[in-house]
Amino acid sequence: MGYEHILYEVSEKIATITLNRPDRMNAWTPVMERDVRHAMEAAAADDGVRVIVLTGAGRAFCAGADMDVLKGLDPDDIRRASSLPSFDMNRRPDWQTRYGYYPAIGKPIIGMLNGATAGIGLVHALYCDLRFAADSAVFTTAFSRRGLIAEHGISWMLPRIVGHANALDLLLSARRVSSEEALRIGLVNRLCPPEQLREQTYAYARDLADFVSPSAMAVIKRQLYEVPFQSLAEATIEANREMMVALNGSDFREGVASFMEKRPPRFSGK
Image 1 (cartoon, rainbow, N blue to C red):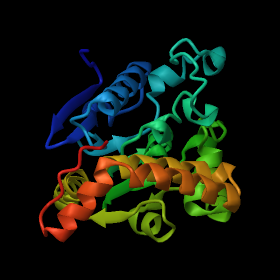
Image 2 (cartoon, rainbow, N blue to C red):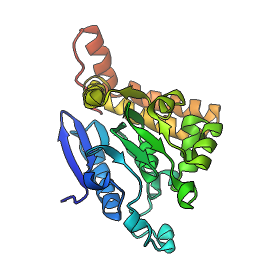
Image 3 (cartoon, one colour):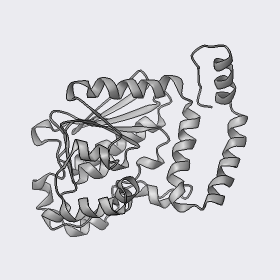
C-alpha cells in the first residue's frame, strides 16, 4: 500500500512508522488515521518485525488535529464506524476502538516523541507501550482549550499512566507540560537530548528485537493490558495457563540453551 501522510520502513526487525507532515507539525488527518492503522497492522502481521517505533518527521511528534479538518468536522463522524475493521469476537472490545487498538498488537510499540505532542497526538503517544522523548519536547492535552472534552479514551488511559490527580490537572487545564515534568509524573519513560533520541530509542528497540523472546513479549503485553479488567486471582489463573504454554514452547528451550551455552539467543517466536 502506498502511504500519503506517513513513512513506513522495516530494518533490523524494527518497523518505523513516521508521521510525515512536517510542514504542519504532523497535524492529524483522516488520511493519517488510515495510514497509521494499516501500517500498524502490517507490522503486527510481519514475522520479520519484532518491535514497532512510532515517531514524527521534523520538529514535532504530532501537534494535534489539523485545524482545517477540525473546523469542518461533522459531529456525526465521531460515531461512524465505516473506517473500522470488522468486529472480532475473539478480541477484547476495548482494544477495537477507533484509536485504542495498539494494546491488541502483540509487539512492543515505542513512541519516539521528538517534539510537540498535543491533543490526538498525545492520545496516540499514550496508546504506545513505552514513550522515549526529547528533553525539548512539550506536551498538552489541548482539548479543554478548544471547547472539547477528553476524547478517544484518554480519560481512561491517562489516569492509568500518570494517576487520577495528575490526569485531572492535565485534562482540565490543558496546560503545557515540560519534558522534565512528564518524566516525573510517569508520562514518559525516558528523556534524551534531541540529538541522542534516535540512537537511544533504537538501541533499546534492538535489544528487545535481538535478545528477548517475541512470544514472551506478546503474552506479557497482553497480560498487562488485561489487568484493569481482572482480579488478582484471575490474573494468577491466566498466568498459570500461559506458563504451561511457555514451558512447552521453543522460545523457552532456546532461552535456557542460550543461557547455558553463553551465546546470543535465536528466538523463533514459536
